[in-house]
Length: 356
Image (tube, rainbow, N blue to C red):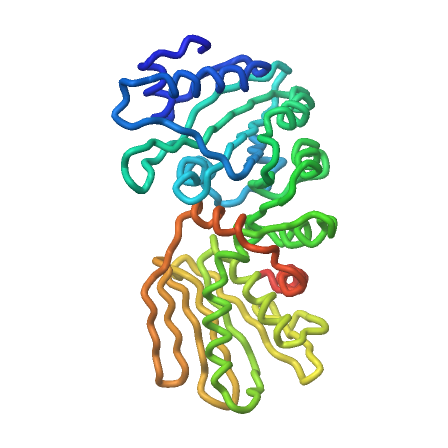
């Protein structure tokens, strides 16, 4: 692609991928931006912006990878609307060809004034078989210096997945989505990361409003409420989200142990007594609903599919309009949020035990 004309530049800024030599990625990108600076034919001047290096590893081995429901292609395309970055997409798959293939493209948006096209670079590296060994050093060479680096994991790395483990060594932040991985192993993995590495969780960020809504129900109560049981309902794809919410609730209630009561419910033991936790996973459930039962009127919080929040406290019902955000915005918000800290670690611990 070394020769960059007006037509190539237009296709590049429109998101079309161009194959390049893996050892000449920076050279090819420099040629593109040089051409953009010299072009006078475009209606909108083109500039690039970058505040983060965002590395996304996609392992194309379903039998060896526990995947999340995260739509990575949509995340990469949409991220520049919220956070300028250089996205490095790493794809590894079985095969005998150790050669690395690479492509470059850009995801662009018009600035607030509508006059300038602001672009974030996207670099795709693909390897087969043992070719993965070339990826970590190549990624290091392609990181923009002087800005933070995040590694976004699409699932739970297995022991043999050396790519993800190597990438985590160069990351300032590791981003996962424990609630979307559809396995309690995700919570174990997140808790097992070394303390010196900043862990960010898309699932934890997405539940901010849910935690705030639950807390608001009890903040206005003048005297402590003895909760007898907690019931949760969720669609199958949100089973992990329910488990993470249950983990946070159990931590807030002072859980010290959990035992199995029966097939559908568990007992959370606290210093003040036992509390029953039960889960109902059903296709008919659109969002997540959590209800609290005590001697007084039941209280519940429901997060609907459109992000709307319905809080029911006895006969009082409060409905808040949906504030649903797309996955790219969720990632941007997560990167700009401090790590969850001790409260998040406790929630992960109990979430694994309470997984439905």
